[in-house]
Amino acid sequence: MEDATTVLDEEDTTVLDKDPQPSDFMTPSGQRILGERSVKPSAKVKDTQWKIAKCGRGRVIKNFDIVESSFLSPIWYINHCFTLHFSSLPAMSVTCDLIINLLNYMDRGAIASNGVNGNIRTCNDKGKCNPATGIQGHFKLSNFEDGVLSSSFMVGLLIASPIFASLAKSFNPFRLIGVGLTVWTIAVLGCGSSFAFWFIVLCRMFVGVGEASFISLAAPFIDDNAPHKQKAVWLGVFYMCIPSGVALGYVYGGYVGKHFSWRYAFWGEAVLMAPFAVLGFLMKPLQLKGFPSTDSIKMASSDVPKSFTQFAKDMKVLCKEKVFVVNVLGYVSYNFVIGAYSYWGPKAGYSIYKMKNADMIFGAVTIICGISGTLSGGFILDRVTATIPNAFKLLSGATFLGAIFCFTAFTLKSLYGFIALFALGELLVFATQAPVNYVCLHCVKPSLRPLSMAISTVAIHIFGDVLSSPLVGIVQDHINSWRKTGLILTSVLFLAAAIWFIGIFINSVDRFNGEESESEKQRRQEQSIVTP
Image (cartoon, rainbow, N blue to C red; front, side, top):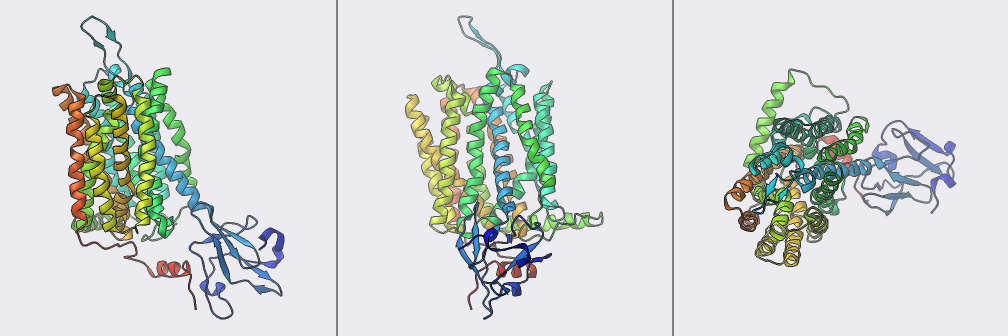
């Protein structure tokens, strides 16, 4: 089998200025053989054009043989003639999504690190004092105020998430992400330049606005472009960026805060995110399943009332979907614990076990267990067949076992015993990331997926870690024992496991193909292999 560049000359190639029709790829006997995704021509032809090769006596090759296909490096061969490659655009977009998600959660880890978050000035009975460090020391914050700082981004996320999800029906999703990431970048710059507690809280709110544009649109895009039998794995890869991003933030914030200043940590994040904000405006837009074409971005003022009416109808549909409600309730309980772990973990570890490098230790444990657990959860769900009931089984089982290990870890006095059991617990609880988001995406029709992800994200934060961070601070201020506080917090994981266990017995329907326009049906038929 030979490559195109060695077989064909440009004169032997027919160039089409529009997408080929199904009849363009029929064999003489009428058999249609197509692959799973669209292809683009060789580098000699513009991206908007297609090639149909002629071989032998001018015969147009119309018989496609699939030899190899993978998500990031797929290759298709046209029989005995030349090679076509998938468009690299979906793979590039997915890669950008992963990096953006990583940077977003790196910011969460950085602000929770001892290097950035810091401590207030304290003195022991002998008169020896530890100097004030980081944000808490600079602004002289109580633990409650410190918890409020960690949760303030949720105000922006709460308000903006449903708005961005609804606008995706009228505006290009990639342009919306570009707007959001620009807001995120400016807000993070403001965090580093803050001069008062109220100002940094305000900037954190706008960080939430920036995140809102991304979280509701990225997962549906990945769900559309991942191979059918690997959807959970690729969702796992995407959500792997949550624990690994937080862990990277611990390390990054600890290092920058210690050697430079907590302000430089925020400025560095802004520099890293700025190129992706620009890409949001420049990248060629791709279509989301269940949505009309958004190539022409128009929205008349008369459509605004209609948009609000449609939003209300969509919310009613979501609230009536029992699978969605149960899934989100379990996710809220889960995130109540995980959010507090991520914010207070380094400080609790330093207090209980006198960890000198708490940021590094928690960062290393979280990044290893987060990556391994999240990928394992997606892989296992795909192996047992990705269905909603199977996802609930994995969610309840992994969370219950993880809760046992984490709870036991806080009862141990040995640092090494704590790290070992807590690592096993984190490995199990992070296995929930792919299945819980798989349920969110597949229990609703495609056009509701951005709203489903937005409302899910808002709910798990506003009723989860937004409450847990300051509440844990209040509990700690009263009982002054991080060990007891950790045990009380971890017990909530058992509630999450119980709620997800109920989901196993709910009658569920996978609605991924629940709505399709005629053009989508035709495109899906053209993307499947049809035999005579």
